[in-house]
Length: 348
Image 1: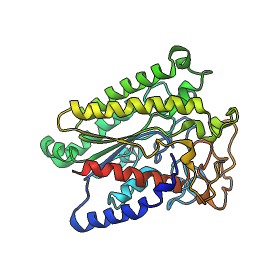
Image 2: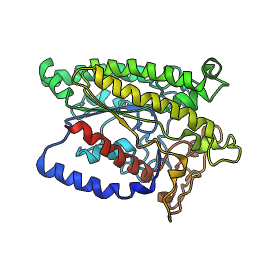
Image 3: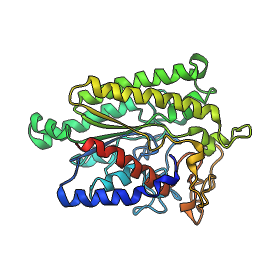
Image 4: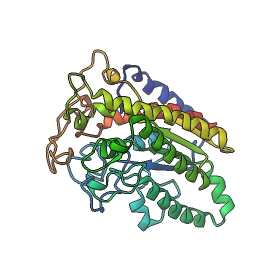
């Protein structure tokens, strides 16, 4: 969730890599499975009893099919990543494939307000935690295996698929830093909480491995102390809330170590830490370019989401945030581009 000046050249580099892939190979991964939160949710929350859903305008104002439940004006980073990897269509949300049963290209399990912890986001209503997303993945895998006729063929394909995880932000903004609803801040110091989350996440990633995942990209967290929802609480003169960014940095450090350890310990596995979102607040600006940090849309005070049916800002590409939590499409594109360069390492 960052916009750095040195990322401008990334677009040219990615275009070159994509051209090479199209010429010399088929899809680098036969399927893509997405796990996470609202940063990559593509509609799984639409029919849930929760305030964390956005199946209404002005969300989707720049998306081909309008408001689909994506928490931005257009494409998410997962949508862009799928395009960069050569998929001809968007990876469908689990809520959709429950009806169609088509999981051949992969599934998006992500859910707004979801976290690594199962209780994260509960004050907002129902959400699909990472534990439940893994259970949903098991359901999808049974259909995947059935479509291939035998378990051996299905397993060989699954081992080659990409598994992309973007989760953990809500464990801070909708858990640790919501003491009105959760006790975690009373029980854990920031370092203890980072270690606790990393240990929990480790168990979940091992479960994913046991379900056949071998090529796994895990995104670090962005500077959560810089999102408008946090900044409105008071920054004491700084651009962002430094204490929150410091806490997130502790988790990212733990996550890097975890990813390296899992790659070492689990046979035939390849875990990659994706640092596209893990940048300093001072890197949110491109020299010589005006980037606005305030939300692009008028937001509801109670939720921080866009007012239903409201009119968004006219020039969305100069806004970093669409609402009080989520980046605009242009930022998602930058994040996806940088993520793609990390994921190239998994193509070997």
